[in-house]
Image (tube, rainbow, N blue to C red; front, side):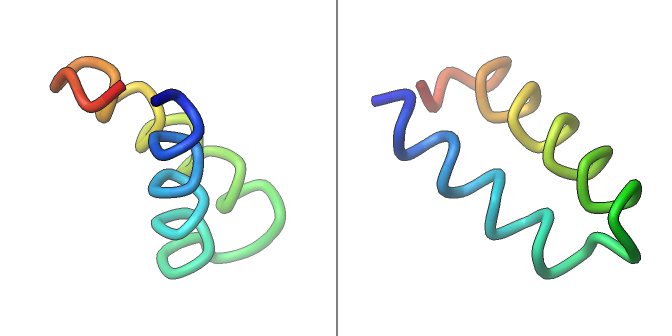
Amino acid sequence: MSFIRTILAGIAAWKWGGGCLGTIIVFLIAYWLLGYLGCS
């Protein structure tokens, strides 16, 4: 279910990322957080 985790992190990055670098940082944080919470 890593695909769903990637999609959710991508959506969060798209909505909250300010620019190119901000989007990458938000994606990485959201991806890690979803994995930490067990949404893998």
